[in-house]
Length: 245
Length: 359
Image 1 (tube, each protein chain N blue to C red):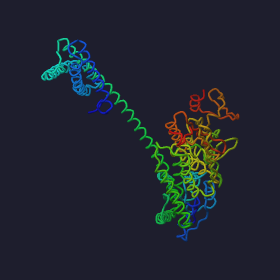
Image 2 (image 1 turned 90 degrees about the horizontal axis):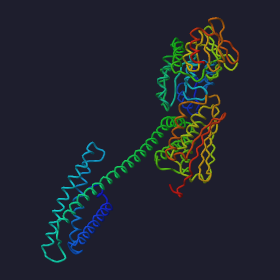
Image 3 (image 1 turned 30 degrees about the horizontal axis):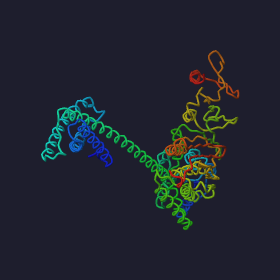
Image 4 (image 1 turned 60 degrees about the vertical axis):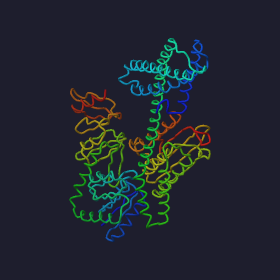
């Protein structure tokens, strides 16, 4: 079995490494000290199991689990007991409370072994992680995994979001990012007082709207500060009129 | 017996007033030509002192039974008028009895002739003095009640402060403690000596912080000892990632500060600053005394990519410190925080007090 240990504290990684010594069939393929490294290592190395701390720099454990969902199964390890329920929403295999004993650790590992054969579970988990993230709205930032790279975009820096088949294209500071997510899901994660769904295919940041113009007799367009023109649907027009006056 | 008679001083003053009244009454008796001065005094002083107790006690109980501001307030004048008339009537009887007793020995320095005008004077005086005693009781009862309420509110405030400090302590407890124990658990097999050092630091930190009392200020030096224990423990956890710089001037060390006022700032600096940086950074604690003002500054590196207002966590800690400063110094203390680029700083200014300068 191939595992990755993710914790920002070297000593905490040491405990896991030491406990794993008892299990010669387990190979530690990487150790990561922050969320970015973790996502990169998990995507590239595709381990079976990841021991994941929650409080970490850059990306926390849940964000890592969301971005790398489907690539591996997770066991969370943290000193905070209040995240346990959230961890199981992410379909974690187990939740270790620091400090933990070798026995408790072995138990978690045995549980993981029993579940890893179950391939279908990993797919279901992707959806579970998504749902779990959606429930913890609104998010101050949007995370996009681009291969092994992670982009973190502060939500106030997003100009607008455009639907593209199964993806959404997020436009921020002149750059575009594709994310595998539905419009409705992303809309529910963004602060409703800042982002408006003005069209079936467009969510706009109200701050970026310069003015609204009449396009034809019964249709309107929003002109953004960088002169981008976005169509507004009839219901979208009512919504934006109520806010932009 | 409470109220006016609860303290020896109150009783002495009360009796002195009555003694003076007795002398005055004796004087009046003499001046009215009823008897020589000695006879007048021998009649008036004991009678007055007796009335002091009789009227004093009975008025006191009536005052307790009819407290001011109760629904029965309207009946108070009536009750006291009746009581005063009855009491002074009895007083006249007692005075006559005493006078008769004095006359029994038929010596020329005792006994007076109680004429009807004198009897009327005694009754009138009795009524007035009864009212006077009642008024004094009411004033004293109200005064005691007010000072009692003040003391209770003071005690309540102290208790609230203590509770707040306890809460602050439990705020540090769980995660800091569990993470530290996890580090110790790792060290026991990797470096047993370091594990022992960490245990000792942890013990010192908790012993000191648990021994602090909210209303007792500590010197900045003591607070810094606590902070050093805390940072030593966190340095084991974070390793190279946590660097510490301390610039506390000697004359600032002797200044008094509310206990655990800087520790939460340092804890925040580590948790929200260094804890979010993969490469770590530096926590700086600075303090200096400028004449009558003590300046304290805690500075730490932050992740520039993090959105600045992380509503939870740091906000609560800082609001708590601000509240405690306001409680201890009112408007004389201030706290400001600001984030500039990759650095976050909190600055406190408070009156510089030392043990020798009082307060």
